[in-house]
Length: 230
Image (tube, rainbow, N blue to C red):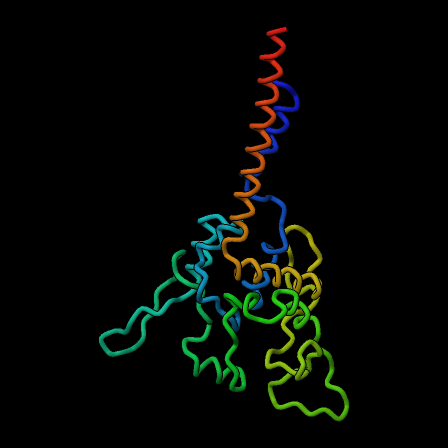
């Protein structure tokens, strides 16, 4: 086996390994867990789906077990809950819509499962909104629970500024600035909104690596056969 063949096989094998270095989407998951999940859910996404971002089964089980899922009622009609499992959806932290609205000045925090797909402008628009809070200009009056935001045409939003520099610590040492966290969580939500995009890319890389390896082996075999005939 030649040096080039060994290098190609090594490169192809690395594709199968989970990314050790932190990616924007992986950091964005951390932002969701520590910031966004206080008000938002992702009911079309299961905890187990986070394995595509590199979370181990134990990490997923631990995260899910810290959350409570509705589990019917007891004999007295009192609602019961149970710890979530990997197959459960990531629900809103509010037990029902009424409580969600009561806690947010009548507004219900949107589900984030497909926000990057349904919001005009997609993930980039999410990033802009997160970074476009500003002091309310003189002469402008906003209703209670509204915050001035220049990324929206009506210039206000019901969500208070969620990000502050240094509010969390990334394990990979990336500075957790507001701009960094906004970009990361936007990348995470974009990936969640397109659940098979990562897998399609991974399969595409596998196919290209396989075809390149086969082409190289065919070339080397052909060379060897013709060399033996000379």
